[in-house]
Image (cartoon, rainbow, N blue to C red):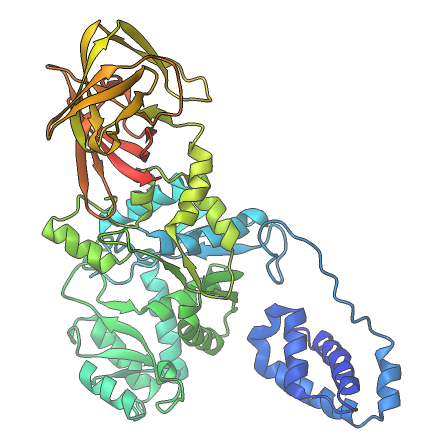
Length: 563
């Protein structure tokens, strides 16, 4: 913290505030102006308040004319310029910025997680800095081996390539060393209170058992714990702050615990004392050289615990930038964002994996045809705003539509099929472009003279309509399972133009579309769709965009993307 600069800013704004209010400046108003000019100073709010109070007393001791004269040495014009892209980071130097994304390998990352990953990565890219992917895997109950690779794959799929990958489970020895230091300093202690007792005492602002124990005794308990003398739930380690702290989170928070009922997926049974989230994060953020942390404001209390740990140990504290909550409207999804609901659905067999379109995981969005470019543009647009944001998926769909519209072949598929018989039709060779505006080639259908049969959507049946790229028909008879019509010329008019699939006695192909709400729609899909590749994004003509999930030949399964 540059105290001289803060005094100068405080003097500048104290003078202005005093002149505007009859010679008396307000401390709170001046503090607000100082921090507004340099938001990175917010972390030093207490120190700044003391300096501002002193400066305001000095300014308020001047007469009004002196205050006005002193103001002349400062410029109060705020220059605003239009800025594209992300706003600058406070105290950031090109090439020296280090940011991180720290997921727990307890599931695939979802759209909410991706916001933190993308924000940190985009800033690292912007400042030619370092982006660290750090796996917070100190809870053996939640960390599972398949999720490590899945997270790396999904990040790479959306264009996020870490400069370094760190596993907290590789650093368990480091955390134990720092735990010993805190115990030696008398800043932490062991307690044999049960979890129920801990919760009760915290509510009642009472000290935990063992709070007055000596550092030597605490170190001895740690050694005995490491030797396996105490079992899971029998002892835990706590940071010594204040049992009656007004913020419940700072009432001697837990920093380490015993876990000996399950092995760690990467370290096996080697360890039985594991750091808790805030302790491991505080050590890593300081010792890995993290300069800035962008994360949700729901981590505000975690940040206070982590900063206290760093201050106790004399470690560097990164600049924390909190962004607002990102709420996604999930009404169209059967499962959505919740990893708990996804795990339950997986165990019950109601979804086909973490990438099922009924979820909002990154894998599911990619499987549906949402492009990495669309996700990047979306997160660039919302940045790291402090205000909470409620997002309709239509916003992401709109961005994606602009990207894929020129890439997607148009394919005929009928959702609610009814048989159409056309009488008096001539021999026709229909040459149908795969895209109306972009040259992607064409497919050809040959139809012989006489009665021609098609599958069409029963919702499209009107008295007169046009089969796209073929001819017009006029309906002469409607039934439950069949519509009879007659050929009515080839001239293109104002008739409704509908997609169609030729009726085939043999060799027909079924299309199946899986929707986010759990619906499955089956219907005939055109013969030439057999050439579609797994992963290809198409537009099912006049319906919606979808991504080919599996082309099995006889059946093609697609994931719905959006309209």
